[in-house]
Image 1 (cartoon, rainbow, N blue to C red):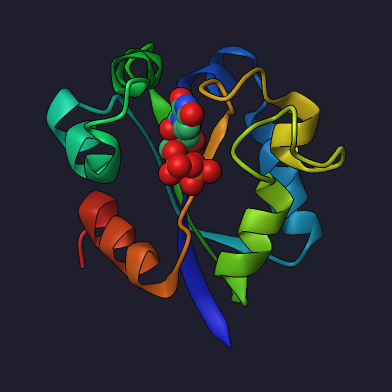
Image 2: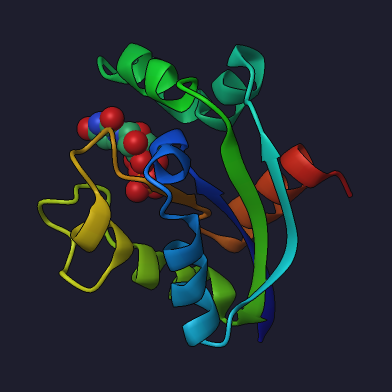
Length: 134
Ligand code: UDP
């Protein structure tokens, strides 16, 4: 099934000049960029995006990380794009993410893990609408 998913290259992905290499990994696996924009996310946008984590002790650290600078927002499209994108990205903690995954290769720690990718059909739709509109 052709799906769309939302990917965010977090601020350090841009300051470390990793965007090209990150995008290449998706393209290598026949996933295409259907929309892309660079933007600084506001506190309000981030609180909405990470609403399920507001009570977590790491939430303030996550917010300041995500506000270090602009991010690259992308809609990625292709066959089973949601699951395949998560696989390319790797699990949350870069220490546990497989080598060869983006977080495994480039992630720093559990907060500074470089990339966001939607985790289900419902969240993908919600997140694409949130950042790109209908
Ligand atoms: N995060 C963190 N500490 C944790 C777990 C998560 O700082 O113990 C951050 C990390 O940047 C992660 C984001 O919060 O990507 C969202 O967490 P979630 O559990 O949704 O993980 P993801 O879907 O991004 O792998």
